[in-house]
Every structure is written in C-alpha cells, then in structure tokens.
Length: 209
Image (tube, rainbow, N blue to C red; front, side, top):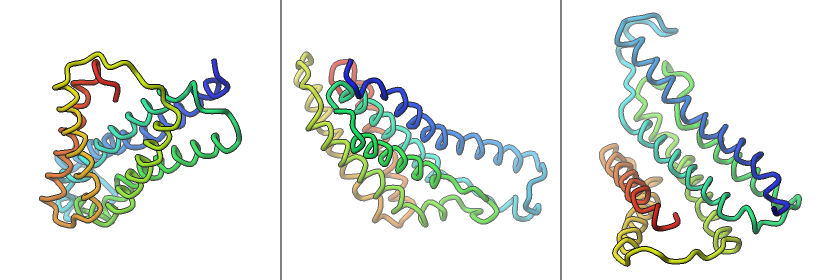
C-alpha cells in the first residue's frame, strides 16, 4: 500500500460530498414540483408558484456533472498507487475536489423565487460550471498520463473505435457548452454528452475508462 492510498478514503469522502450536493438539488426540485402541483405553501405567492419552471437544462446539466465526478472517482482509483503523498499532492486534490463542490453548489438555484425559470438560471451560470468541468478534466487527464499504469488490451477493436468516436463527440459537445446560449442547442449537447457516458458505461467492462 502506497502512502497516498492511506488518504484515498478521505478524498473519496470529499468527492462524495460534492456529488451529494448535486444529488440534493434533484431532491429539492422534486419537492418543489410536488408543492407546485398540489398547491401547497412556499415562500412565494400563488402567482409566483405557478410561474416557476424547472425545465430540462439544469437537471440534465446536473446529470452530466455527476457523470464527470464519477469518472474523477475512477481517476483517483487508477492513480492511487502511484501518486506520492506530500503537501503539494494533498493541496492539489483538495483544490480539484473543492472546485467540484463549488460547481455542484452552483448547479441548482437556492431560491427558486429569485430564479423562477431554471433554464434562465442555467444560462446565467453555464460558463462557471462548464469551464470548471473542462479545467478539472484537463488536469485529471494530465494526472492520468503521468501516474496511471497501462492496462492490457483485452477487447475487440470495434469497441475501441466506438469508444474513441464517443469520446470525440462527447468532448466536442462539452467544449461547446460554455458558448451556447440557445436553450435547444444546449439541450441537444447535454443529451449528446449523456449518450457518450451511456456508451462509455456499456463498454467499460472491457475498456478502462
């Protein structure tokens, strides 16, 4: 067991807190939708409650971020035996996971009355979210290149081609998200990225993610 493996559980706990923050948004949105549907009281008036719209952009964005956080967990597991334990490595991982937590905290509006249209909230905060995800992804790929161990190839070639095409389209869609200001285009890109993660999940028993 390496020195870094001793603190691996701590980083998993912190990453779990970041993922829980994103999941908590789904619970709050579900409760909000239930209150609106049944006409129960909220801090807003009846007219305001009727105008609150959750939409698709924020929930799909939260799913994409959760998938990216899952891949970061796989990254930590992949490099846990090779990363040296020192103050720099601890600060670097704390910074990355803390960054993920901030992204998760910004996915959902805390006060729906201030943002009755969740799609508008997404558009206002999309650059912070997606530039953050892109930055963490680039740093994680650099770390994987430096610290990961090459695994033996044991799968059909067509699976690699499928995974490569999926990665290409998923990456291009993610890079475009911060700059897309049209709701329908953003929705299409989010669906494309989730399809990429579905393909990655399907081939993951044979191809390391």
